[in-house]
Image 1 (cartoon, helix red, strand yellow):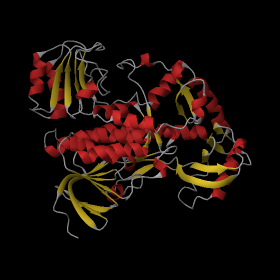
Image 2 (cartoon, helix red, strand yellow; image 1 turned 30 degrees about the vertical axis):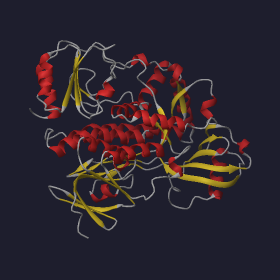
Image 3 (cartoon, helix red, strand yellow; image 1 turned 60 degrees about the horizontal axis):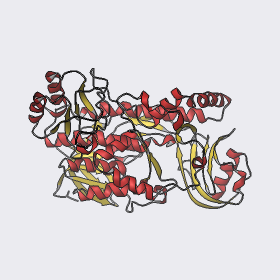
Image 4 (cartoon, one colour; image 1 turned 60 degrees about the vertical axis):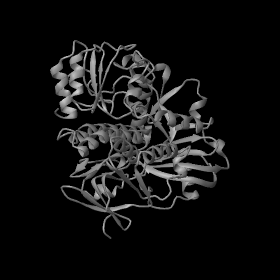
Length: 506
C-alpha cells in the first residue's frame, strides 16, 4: 500500500505514558506528530488500582509541573486514592518508600543535606497509570497530535531524509521515528540494536483473588525460605518465586497454579476460591546498546527494562521523553547545534544503567538464602539511620539525578530550583512554553543582550527571589536542567559559550 501523502516530523510507536509525553513535548515546539498504538482500547484493569498505581518521583513531578500538567494529574490522583486497607497506611510512622521491601521513613530523612533544594521542594505522588495516560492523551490531542489506536508498527525503512513506517497494513512517512513500544519493541529489533543485561532470577506475581482463609497470611511484606510475598487484605497479594523466571508468559495463569505458588512461598495452607486478576513479571534487566540508529530513536521500556521493584520504570521513561523532546524538536526545526541530539543518549544511557543496577541489587537482597537474610539485617539497620534513610530517599525519589555536563558550578547538570520571584511567579510556571531560560538575579544588561540574540529560543527574567541559594545567574535548558550557573559576578563569556552549546550559534 502506498504511504500516506502526509509527512510527519515524528512518528512515535507506542501510545503509553512515555510516547504520549514525548508527543506533547514535540507538539509544544511546533512539530507534527503521529502516534501509532497497537492496542485498540487504552483502558485495562492492570492500569487501575491496585496494580496500576505508580509513584511519581521528584524529576517527574517537576517535569509535569513545568508543562502545566501536574495540577490536573494531582487532582485525579486524589480522586483515585489508594484504598485505606493498604498495609503501610496503618503504620504509626510515615513511610517514604522501600528498597527490596525494606522501608525508610520520613522521620529519619534530612532534606537539609540536599544542596540547592529549596525547603518543601521534595515530594512524591501516587497515580493510576490509566489516569496518567488519560491526561497526557487529552493534552496531546488538544495540541494537534494524531493518535491512531489499533495500529501496530510492523517494520520500517529509513533513508537519510525520512523513515517509512509499515503498520497494520498501511504505510506512514516521518522525518524521525521514536520507539516507545515497550520491552519487546518492534522498533528496537528492526533497528538491529542489541538488548543485553541479566536474565531473571524469579517470576513475580501480582494477584487479586478471593481467599477462603486469608487470615492465614500475615499482612505486609515477608521474606521466606522460598521467596517473598506481600499481602494486602482482604484480596490482594504479590509473590516472588525464585524459579529463574520460568513461568513468566510460558503458560496460562490458573487459580490452581497461583494457589500452589502462594502456599509454597508463604508456607501456609491458604486457599484461593476464585482468581479475579493476575499478571506475572520478572527481574530481567536489559538495556539497548544505543538509543539511536540513524533517524530512529528509543525511549522508555524499548530502551531499558528491569523489575518493577521500587517503581522506577515509569519515571525513567518519562525522564527520557523530557530529555529527548526539546532536543529532537530543535533538530527538526534546524535551530539546535549539530550534535545536540547526540547528548540524549550520552545523558540518559548512564541514568538507565544506574537504575538497572539499583533493581539488580534489590533482587539480590530478596534471594531466599542465608547470606541474603544476613545482608537484609544490615540494610534494615542502615536504612533506619538519618544517613541511611536520606541516602535511600535520594535514590528512590530521584533527588540525586544529575547529568555530567562538564566542569562548572555544582548545580550544573541538576534540576533548577523552583525559585519564587519577587512578583510571586515560580520558575516552574515560567517554563510552560518549553523554551530555555536565563535567570538573572544580578540584573546584568549584558546577560539580557546575550539572551536576546537567541531569537526567542531563550527567555530572560531579571528578578529578586525569596531565596536564591547564593546564586547570581543561571541558564536553564527547556527540560529544566541547569546548563550554566554562577554565584559570583556573571562571566559573560562563559554564559555565551553555554548558550551556544545548547541553543546554537547566533
